Image (cartoon, rainbow, N blue to C red; front, top):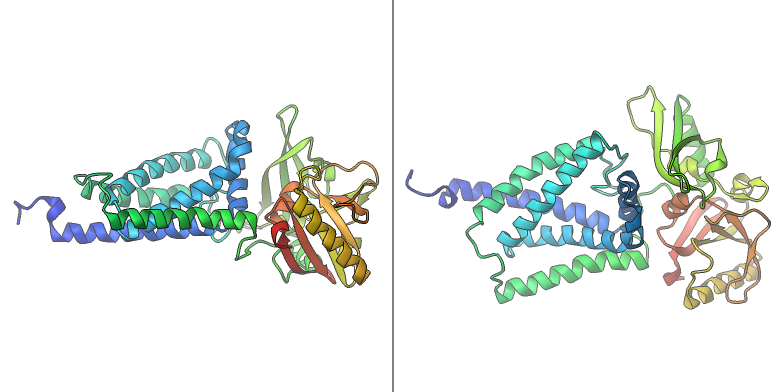
Length: 373
């Protein structure tokens, strides 16, 4: 028995299979939940770029987000079905080492509020993520060492077919959810939410808490803290969101996102008046009014016409600063009044650049990417 190499011992092979399955399931779960919400992953990546001073990568954040989540999901599938384990475990080991270092830095010298490791399904602090990576890293190292003698790129026909299938599926999930909406909405503004009631409940839970919003001045690069009552941060051209902190004696972390719902015009806040509208309120969510495709313009026009038939109000929400009464026409539609909303809040409410949210008596009853209108 002692003459049998460790790699070939039955007990070690069983332990290797255990490690492989644990790592594979973790990668599949993590990659799947993030692939179904590429916007959320992109926001998390943006936080890292701001923290590390790498904002010049922002134009490719969404592409990187879809690729990163898809690669994680693909590696998990390949590990689970034993497709080129030598190659897959090598890439997994390198990525685990990188993210272990990154989460350590994020938990210590360069703090980031949320690592986004499991999307919005399971919220982990950077320290919790670091500990999770410390547990997974030895497991993937065991798998890598067990299959180290194998040839890295010697694909059989079946392995090649499975690899192509996993790649198309993994990248396809993120791409689909980018052009549509996540199939599962775990955010505060999901369908069925009464926004006004949710805000009241959040305020009641936070009576002993102080929420602090940290924004970065785009021109000077300096950070500034704002209270929720101070709405000076509602200037997309000047301020960029960096972090949200809750100062409380309560050890539990309080999620303040619903309290950041703030709609304004040139005269000030109009949130309560809009949420109190009876019947349907059609909300056109537009990140940039000058970058709407022709097809999307036509779809938004159909919404305006539908609202007119119902004699229901229709408004446009945009993060672009509004300093005077502003109206916008979509494909020569009737003029729609525009209101201001923070870009992060807009992306939290609707994971799309442009789309539709319908409120009925203040309750979210429909959400659609412009593609699905």
